Image (cartoon, rainbow, N blue to C red):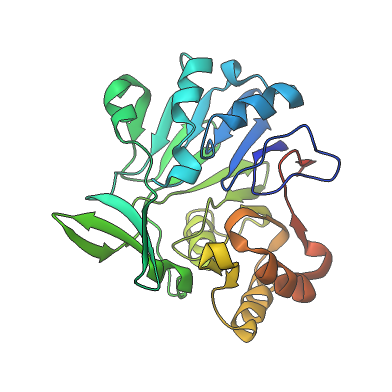
Length: 282
């Protein structure tokens, strides 16, 4: 399986020709199938795809990890380039998504829901574990006993003029059964990285995890690049991941540079950073 990072916050070394933005978009070549996991904040993913030789028109399925603009803002551009692939996503939140920092700064962070009304035939809302392509599964119900990221406390849904903490029931995790192993894609892990892994592993007991790929939302107060949680907590997360049957972990975007450094000190070579233009095989 080949994974190409079309959008991430920063560009890979030597990637001056790529466009970077706060967001995530991954292209997967899995057997005979081409899958797009998220589309970043704008249409820049398509520009980077052209530079990397990725044909968006041939994508068989697109998966939206959750209803935030940095993952779904590029949907109009996707529809410009692809006329047939279905977009799989969980039910939208009951209101508009916002971030609020220090009670001083409030900003809308949901993607434009009118795109769903403009292309209703392209969207498939999943309410249960669904096999969208052979051996490709999406899980809209994420459960587990592990704590969720602290950074979630700044994220809200506005409904009838009131702000409520987002419960992230609109987030999904995707897993690909690759032979006798799993590859898990987490988006932003708002439900907690370990809970997302547990949800998949529970469905496929006994199968090892070849790789976990995505953001872990260990950043808070994004403009200040602060770490969500103490160094001890982030170290504990790294040790917990090592205790799972996970061979490799690839992360970027909302994990944050500071948390990545802490995780790297614990996980060593089993943790790899991804950037715009990064291509790798698992």
